[in-house]
Image (cartoon, rainbow, N blue to C red; front, top):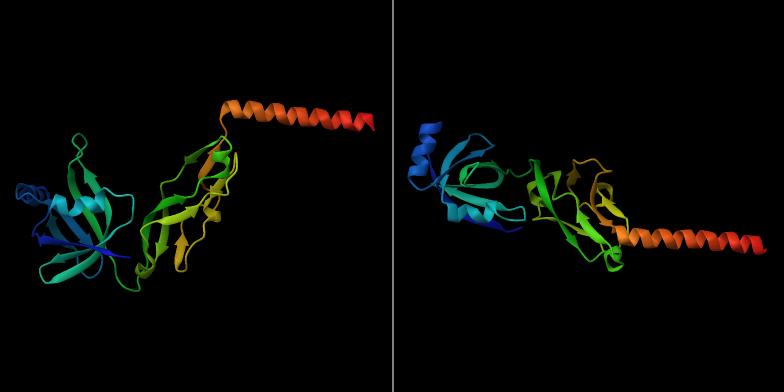
Length: 205
């Protein structure tokens, strides 16, 4: 997958005073965890907004001085009122070392049940997996075109790529086709009528 490139400034010190000084310089305090050392940095909002406000999993190459750190966003701290980004935690990716990530789910196709009058309900937005960096993709794609009325797709139904270990309960539903109340009533009447017809046919014999 492609990597998003950005440049950051290394910051010394920790705590509220250091974070306040970083914000005063027009930067967002952040830290890169993993590997031999943690690196405290300051990043520009315009450089990281594509990493934060996205529906895909994004890997970034962060240049700090002469070093480049390949990372992903692990956690974002937002202001409770203004939603301003207060702090970002990055995790460094290392070749050959598996990481646990939350991968977005992308549904493809129109369920058969939707064409029959139902509606699709997405129950899970992301799925936790353990994967080597070389196998990371932006999202897990799931074909739901075969789902009929009342049917669900579960974790165990996913076609997982090589090198990916799913960490969720296999029975957990991630999406299902909901049958509207009015359609349930019609289906119930049809089922009852079918049962009555079978009874009448058996009596006639």
